[in-house]
Length: 259
Image (tube, rainbow, N blue to C red; front, side):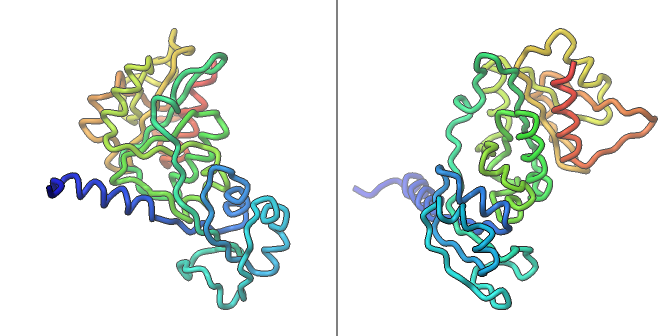
């Protein structure tokens, strides 16, 4: 009996995802990926100079590097990539389900970042760095219309991609509903909102909080706005304030944690 088309399509998608690989580049990104026990590492291409700088990480990973000429670098990277003589082919990380990543544990004040169609890998990489610094449990984005795990994202994250969960979900609104069911207060960032983050969190500092940021320009989609418990803005000292989305994420996280 022939399988239904939807079953065949699902199996094809699963096989495609399993075979997908990413080329990470740059000394920091490659070093941290080499040291990540949860990262499936396939091929390492380095110049002799980079191999010397990464010698300890290479030895710990157990990989056999391919030594390449810097002028004819063997890894299939964009010619504009600043690879610093190091490139590593890997499989994307699997962080597991949202419910396990974002559960509140004893002694924690959980914070989560959600990104609504933020597609620039440099912005997402910078957000991952801030999320790691401020202890966010995860950065969550929709599977479509978001920045995938790429070498450019990993290089901007400067190693944070290996430690900071970056979870891409099928439906952002459903992820928000799941977080709300787990006790999260969901706050959407909107420059024209009537209240600041600090005001919205009065009396709620110890609650798990999810901060939702939209793409620069369009901001949050209407469905995303409607899924939030409240819309908030960052308090600015002057009459006008505008931040890049990665800077806004860092300030919002800090504001949600400071008392």
